[in-house]
Image 1: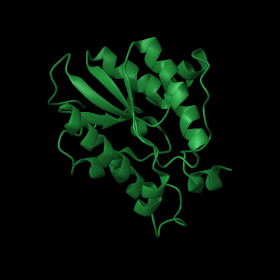
Image 2: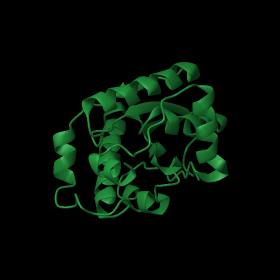
Image 3: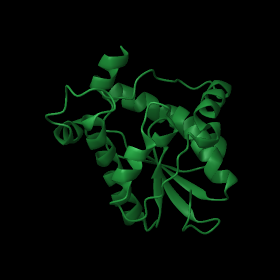
Image 4: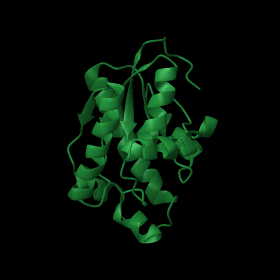
Length: 182
C-alpha cells in the first residue's frame, strides 16, 4: 500500500520487462501517480535478451506516454553480486542478492533524479516472493511496498501483454533461472 505519496507525485518504477510493467503501470496510473520507468536488469543472461526486453518495454511506455531510463548493462557486476550462490535454488539466497542489486540501483537512480519514491515490478510475478522483496527494500529510503500481484495483477499482465502483442519470456532473466525453467 502506498502510504506516504501525494497524488500526482513521481515514482521511479524499476522495470524488469515489458510484460511485468503493464499491470504495474496501469495500477500506478489509476492511483494518479506519475511513474518514471527505469530499465535496470544486468541480471539478464545476454545482452541480446536485455535489448529484446528493453524494446518491448518501449512499446508499453509509448502506449502509456511514459519516459524510460535505460541503465547500462553490466552483467559482470551482477555476477559478482551473486558470486557463491550460482547453484542455489530458484527463489533462494541468490535471488535475494539479485533483488538487492536491482533495488540498490533503482534507489541510487531515484536519488540522482530527485525522485523521492521508488518501487519495482518484480512483485507482479507469481514466482517472486513479495515479502522477501519488501524486506530487502526496507533498507532503502523511499522504497514503496507495492505488491503488484494483488488485485489480480499477474493475470492482468498476461492479458495486457497479449493485447499489446509483447514478447513474454519464460524465465526471470539470469542464466541460473533459465536453467531451472529450461
